[in-house]
Length: 502
RNA sequence: GGCGCUAUCGUCUAGGGGUCAGGACGGAUGGUUCUCAGCCAUCAGACCGGGGUUCGAAUCCCCGUAGCGCUACCA
Image (cartoon, rainbow, N blue to C red; front, top):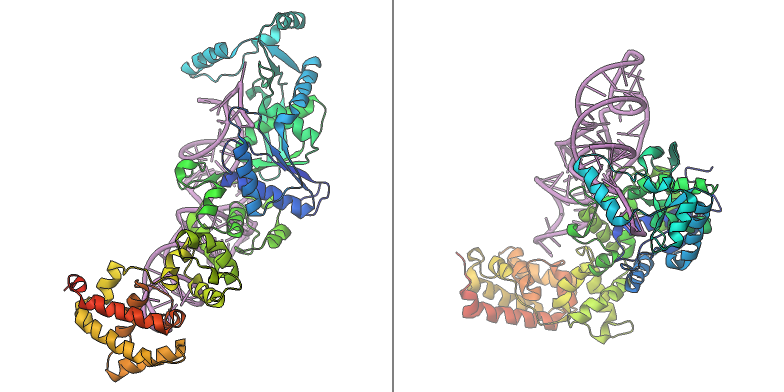
């Protein structure tokens, strides 16, 4: 058996989500590891929708899951197959087990069993099905069935130990005495999870089952089923769970857990993919940001951690900012277009081929390093695309009306002078505007900062922005002068005076 | 309760019988500078506890402890 990542052709794995909601990031990571594994070994990834729980499964959910996977760049080779379409095969497998004496009918009834279970629990005893119906004579069993008595089919768990060499956990074993006779077929004839799973995995010739840790205790049951039909079980690899900050399995109460949610929040698929891959796996050598190809090349199930990993949003955010930084401005433009439209900021001359396209890409470039998620662009870009923006109160207090800046009157005087100095600058470039501003400040024996800070508020309304001369050049002379005029009249109005703080 | 899994900085992890226990996120400090971000530099910060085995244990074994998972006619 090949291991440690050596390509092993013929590998067939599956990702088997149940469509009862969104695509959970935990599920996405399971899919991701399956995907990495198949790419590494040039194997086949099969997508199987486990929709046998009719009451909870929805088509909408199937769509969401498929979209999520596609968005993340996780493609599959076969499927999607729907488990509900192979109910026949599952039933056949159960009957085969029944006929060979590996399974039996149980007439106990859910209510009666529930009562027994409760009673046992009350005494603090462990409950396991007591095999009441195993003692029924086969003839009698058939007769009761024919008479219409509702029954489930139970697998008769044989004595002995069950063990397997888990690809991530190593040797793992269970004593079958702790496993109860599992229900294979419900009284309505529908198959239960373990039966369907084994039946499908057999049918699909799955060679490696890569799934969450929470399935470890199902594994011995499934191995027993393989044995009962004299089939070779696949190899198993159980991935550690993704945890919330409280170290409990990540769930909705921890906040965002669906792939769709991260997409909507402005995370890049490649960043989420990279982040998820790092949760429980490391290629060593301290590599963090990696391309998919690099991940594939270094991937090995054996290198996956056994410990649950906490989903650290801060690190995701950092990774996302790294990916945003590496993005081409044109790509950013495409990605934020929807945000801008919603904010009423988009006009067609920003589109490819539009009159202001190049200028728009420069604005994006200027905002890139301070954007961690996509919506950060829409948040900061307003003063570049529109004259309709507010002065932030804290910026006004800090740089327009503060007493140490000479109060509104002092600042107004400086802005008026600056307007005059800037009016004659041509071409209106970063370098030229910087030279004009610094010369003005020097001539009046004042620090450049006394001009720069109020200018920033006048230009963008906030105390934070890209380099002021970059902003100036981007905004252009005409609009910059108009904004200085606006600031001066604001400063000279009572509105500003009322905000003076001593 | 039973069974199982797990245990390195706050978090993600590297390492693995002899290391200054390394990196990344986050934090702190300093530098660049017109602000913020970025970038650069520096610092703080960990081998769960106890027994073995061994010349030597964070590393191997055992026992505790803790956390988590499973314990359905859900998947």
